[in-house]
Length: 110
Image (cartoon, rainbow, N blue to C red; front, side):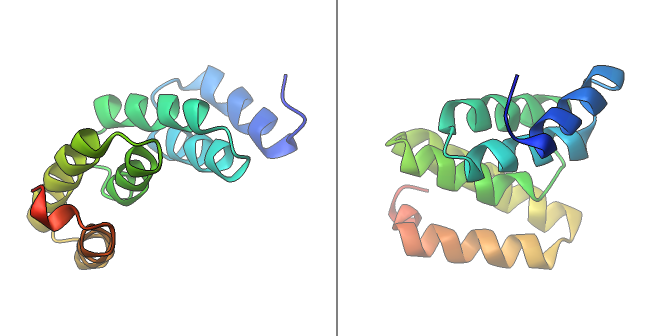
């Protein structure tokens, strides 16, 4: 059990609906904020399978892969995210992700 009440609450919600996109995303962010990159990765990757059109995922998963030294995975998920955010018309998510790609130097990889 976690000492973080938000994580505990989100895990309760997840039991009722294991593929809830918002809960999976929120758990990934909470674990990322708590410094538990592997748990964050678990929830972000689960979300990428459960709801690949969840545009907010791609910025955070790209950054997490990059921070973990998984540059190839970061470039792949960034490229996928650019396509999905463009297709979904989510200009905000597209713009943030594009900025991250440039900031991290992934534009050479994509």
